[in-house]
Amino acid sequence: MSGRILVVDDIEPNVRLLKAKLEAEYYDVITANNGMDAIESARQFVPDLILLDVMMPQMDGFEVCTRLKNDPRTRHIPVVMVTALDHQEDKVKGLEAGADDFLSKPIDDVALFARVRSLLRLKMVMDELRQREASGRALGAISDTMPRLDDTDTPANILILEDDERQCARLAHKLGEGYHLALCTDPREASERLDAENFDLLVVNLAARGFDGLRLCARMRSNDKGRVIPILALVNPDNREQIVRAFDIGVNDVLLRPVDANELTARVNTQLRCKHYADTLRQSLDSSFEMSVTDQLTGLHNRRFMQTRIEDALTRLERGVESASILIADVDHFKLVNDRWGHDAGDKVLQEVASRIKANMRAIDILCRYGGEEFVVVMPGSDINAAMQAAERLREAVALEPFELGSEHGTIPITISAGVTELFKGDTHETGLIRADKALYHAKSKGRNRVLSAGMNKGQLQESLG
Ligand SMILES: [Mg+2]
Image 1 (cartoon, rainbow, N blue to C red):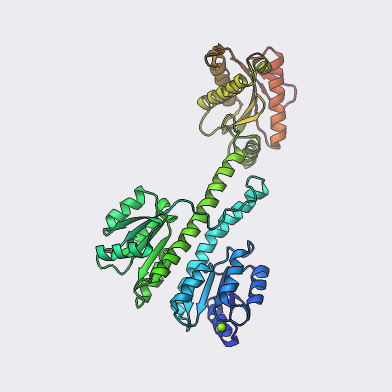
Image 2 (image 1 turned 180 degrees about the horizontal axis):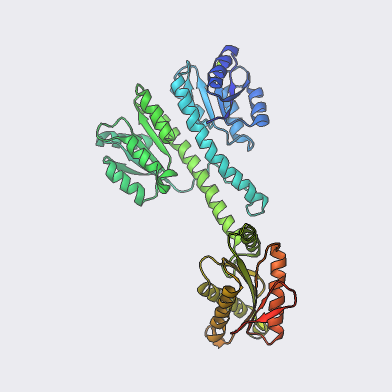
């Protein structure tokens, strides 16, 4: 995995040493010797990761980190604080400033590369979400209010897996109030609960004698539900190999035993913040994507979505993969419905037409509300004959059963007219729709409640047999 890393340290030999180590692993390295330069470089080059010295004159690492995390341009870049000694207070202070991780000097290569790989992987996931979010915003589908990183309103659900019951209780005690904790000593029970319930974090003791915690982590990472749950692993500091394997399997963070209560809380909260951020982004993307392609009244696809799907069908047609047809249907005398029974009744009619379209078309057909009382169905793989049969079936389904408008109005008869055309090489979605619309126009002028098709020759219209 390659990436661009910003190394910040006030002592030049430290910078050179880290740069050399990272470049030997093919990372792209930029450097800064003080806090102001670091912030400037972070804004200008937007690195994938920042290794930040804590002890620096003028502006120390905590201050730099706080500023980076408060700036929307640099907030998403993971920061690893490099502390001179293994000072517990420094770690907690750093986590509170928003640091994502720590390394102590002298920097151990194994720990360095394990942390770097893990954070770069996390950043890749976040970048993808951010990119999708940016395009959603460009389409006008997402508002400009970014979810805030610290907006957690409900207590997080955390599962703690530790084979020793007393240790398990001690961990729960160290975490304190403010979380929903589930305590497990049996990995099988933990697995089942992770599948069945919604957890925001797994804390697992990899040093447990009774089970292989890494196996559980690996299994979690291989299913869709488990993949998005962050894992914080407790490890013995001398078990380097396990730390490296944990990160490689996809554990998000490790905490060295014996567990310090403040560091535990800080690391747990960091993971929960990331999870919350990713969840919020995913939700807003899902709902805005859904909204941007769906007609709110009928639940069918909207015009924008329809156009892209016709273009898709045309692409497959040009490649000789399959034929495709489209139909436009229009509710006959719809204005009369609105005038006589009101707009609510009109809406009900449109919803019922939509549900009859759903019931009578195939799963692969793309069903859209074109606007007003017009509907379009894109039929991939259908030639004109198949499309005419489908359209005729739909016309019948609408005409045969009167529409129920509720106790106020009772039932009223509704019919539709439709124009159908096969798509041909050289068509665009516009030329296809124009042809189908012409057929629809003729169906209307011939008395409505009928389906007509349009061939390639303009004006040559053929009435259906139905
Ligand atoms: Mg320093």
